[in-house]
Length: 493
Image (cartoon, one colour):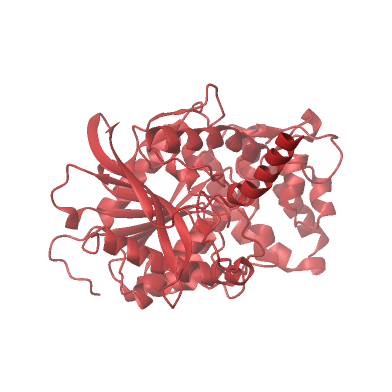
């Protein structure tokens, strides 16, 4: 009995230490690695660990987990590009692009991006490490990043969890990282995926105006709306090209449309969307009935839906309904972030899927791989849980002007180029909305020679499909090459 009581007291005594599982907010481990990219062996140093976030008084308030890949056979680091990589959420770790897109290791999936066992990873023959060094950054509460021990976590939320707070502290962190690693002379690029595009768009101006750090490029992978207004008829109309792409993939279009290649079909749907559908929705209940019937008929043809369902929604078909309806008769739903994926609901009735089929599949594949990779290959040992998605809510979304921030940064910096990358089957941040963001980012048209857009036959994470992994990384290489000024070329208009 005394022994049992002693064990119980010991368990109580050590429980707080186990629950907190503190990390040193300023520590790292480096290993030497190599990867074969495009048939050439690339040696590199991989540094992974924590770098602090300080408050205005110099007190450590958080530690951000990062992984930094630096090619080790480069003599002239000043001309070597540095890519700073963020994922989104908000609340998502940097895992997705890290081990599935640009990094030197690639998780085990099939050629279309579906999970396979045994779990694990292999070399990424398409990694951009041949042309640029890369650091993957995890904002507070994502990955292993955490607030520091002893801080008032409720009070600290306003310093971390919001559009503008996020940009402000991450810019400070980047400044410290670039200084510590001696990369001020290097051409610098930001890449963000999903909410990460909001983040890097804001960072472009914050780095420039508050840290005097000027970028060569910003890459927006599956971009959000960037604070660019599109409510009402615009929001309703812009969904249709995505509906058409998805219906085409699942072979739900009329035969004459189905036999067209996607590259032929989509421009036709886009033209109808901007020239006919948008004005029709804008007329609301005062549209002429004969004209409305014509619009409904064409919209149904392109969306793979019945005319009645489009009538029921007054031309404003919600994406939730589309994901439930398109394959309802076959007993499947389709994925939100990647509509190639199918799900099974409890019942076929209803107006939205029970779950996101694609996200479940991705977590299935990514979670074992990143935990194995960090511990086994990069030698980062900790008992802290790796947060694929961390607690960052409520997130303050007020005063989101990140699209305008990016435009200002481009206008002030003639070196700065921007690349949009989008998957045709992404229903969360759909491809036509990303085109609209690009068009509205620069209403004057004076910056369009530094704006570029690329589309891929996959979803939110277009790089999960093998063919698009090759194409999207090659597009990054070309973008970096194109945005590097010639020696002595001044930044001026």
